[in-house]
Amino acid sequence: MSVKVSVIVTIYGVEKYIERCVTSLFEQTMTSDIEFIFVDDCSKDQSIAKLNALVEAYSLRKGQTKLLSHDVNKGLPQARLTGLNQAKGEYIWFVDSDDWVEHNACELFYNIATQQNFDIVISDYNICNNNNITIKNVKLREDRMLSDILLEINNCSVWNKFIRRTLFSKFNVIFPTANMGEDLAIISQLFVNNIKVGKINNTLYNYFVNPNSISLIQDKNSYIRRYNDLKDNTQILIQTLQKYGKIDKFKNELLYRKYAVIAQLMPIISTPEIYSIWKKSYLEINPKTILLSKIPIVTKFFYILVYLKLYSSFKKLSMKFISKI
Image (cartoon, rainbow, N blue to C red; front, side):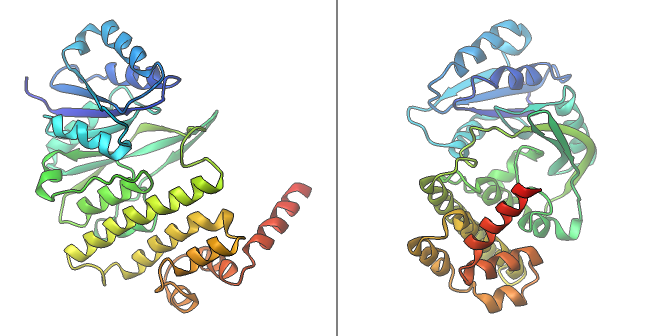
């Protein structure tokens, strides 16, 4: 069959949420020329059983569905790559298995992408935290697209971006092995190029703040792991900018991204060992470069606090003040 859209979903430990995600996909208004690729990254719970039950329940989707399995757990970005390598669609949409999408999302994305020949189409999205829903509007500025992503004015996530499949091979996009900042590493390899990007004025994606996410675990080993993973993926960003001769153009943004790496250590910065790692990670980051940069003033403030070894005291005072309010 001809395939217009390939929806790629990676699965690991999401038995509580998989039915909501898959139902939102199988009930899409796009009923033909679509494929759903699920990648089992060695999930140990009932996620796959629940997926298989839904495939049986939605007979129309059975022939449109592929289930791929890893022999060993490879992590989110490599699982996405497994799905991409099997995809046939003109456009790719990576959907996280604990999130859900609007019923007409694929049709709307595809129509605007093909009508205006966009390489990537971005949508607004909801952040769903328990019963609180926050709408996030994307600001699409054609002359600052990569800069806005690097400075976190727009998010770097792949899940609210509808992407022409051939871009990945055209630009030899590297998929990371580390699981923190992996979307930034991937998206930067696309947006650094001269591509045609559009926005659809619909909120099509619902991002669920999963309390079990590895990015929310608060212990020393988790902070260090996130620091190491983000540093590895920031190196892919650096290599990308070097490859296209754009290090100088994005010098300020790169400084901000490096700061984001060392900021992962701030919750455990009170130990001499961690402070030393924080200070020596990027020698080009120092009080002078931070203060003279164009990065946000709040970033500068917290950097100076840590540099002067005042961050832990400031944090304790802040928590004490908040508790009295």
